[in-house]
Image (cartoon, rainbow, N blue to C red; front, side, top):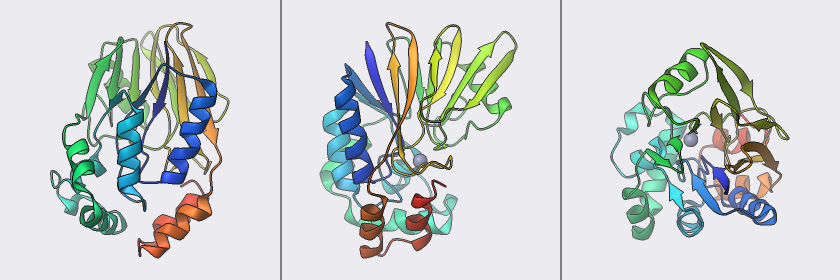
Length: 241
Ligand code: ZN
């Protein structure tokens, strides 16, 4: 079974379309989304529609939950909070219904999925060795998938050690032993590469391959500026931060 893993779309429709085209060229049996479909970006409803139609499993993330009113907007920084308020105002009933029935974690085909981490599926960033170890200790599946940090990662458990780190474009790993993988972000990458990220998981051949896809950053930035979303959220997209 070949599964495409996407995460943190953040209402960036042009990035999502580019990723889905790339996934279609590759040919997969399923698409799993690790959450944060909305927030930050200009096209939340189109992204909810597309993710709802195309994904076989989708999690909810902190940005989805705050837009639904299930988290306190005071827990987000000023720019993110401005985007939350704008998104809440424009979110269609269909999008709300879709996001409302999602959970922040799941287990399927022997793979554990968390939006953020096993210790805190909504909020914790897995960006340190200690956090990676915490999630590997609390979960039991050989393959654990997390999103939320917007940084593509491939971390292996080797006895008591955890080894690995950032997984740039072209990284391929053989899934022997236990692995913690983050596909990176479709709509707002933060690992210095502005291209949209996705991960191919081949469960039959036990292989994972990290992909990056160029898309029109300018088009998304133009839409963000047209809608009056914070300039810092638009400009960061071209730097992948
Ligand atoms: Zn996110």
